[in-house]
Image (cartoon, rainbow, N blue to C red):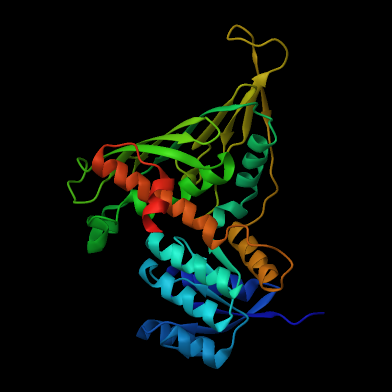
Length: 352
């Protein structure tokens, strides 16, 4: 039996500690150390008798882990991942891959130069529900994809905004939350060619948006709409419909609808609608339920990361792929600011 992978974690906040829990429960790896300068992180590591370092570079040098999970604030992702590439240590980078597309381009160049694999933590791609939705679209089960609807509607508690940066530009649902849904839509439907967007901050009056409406054109020709608001009591969001995180009360509702010339699929309740025989609005619709296997996406992501380190699998979402998701999010922000149609490809060209 091969030895377990030694995985370290940089950043011992909420998501970092969740990764530590997953490593503890994994049959594939053990925790090699924690890097985080905060006193709370030092105490957390000391209580576990786990090696602690204030700086990730000291951790890489002293502990020589097989891989590093980067769970630090987004602004630190680029330098930490770059240091991993130079140290020849594969990394799992929490989303977003970096804080800007320009930084992501530099990281991709380093990955290509060094050959060190990088996996980005858009963990929902590891969810069997998302994989089943992608299969339904790419296999032609829906026919030619024509229309996509995405909903991210819920109400964040008032004390969520006690943290000052969540009330300022860049702290709202577009950059913090929508990136997950954009990545899901790219993974399922293919690349997004063009976006338009409107935003509003009327519900709370903060500098940051609380509501947005998006119009998407996919390269396959399908059109999509996405409604976003973190200021409304509603059950239509991935957090509340998927059951992925037990902290959220699960709702039996969809948050995505994928419609094609042969059928339509609601996700994550996975109901496939089509005509059994003749088609047309007078004909009865048939409803079929798709039941993906139950697999915890974060645990599957960790298993996959260990397989990537060992060279058995290629990253499900590479730094270059994740840069595409970040480019769409930047395009949305630019479209909302200017009122213009914006191409994610143009955002990538500007960052070159």
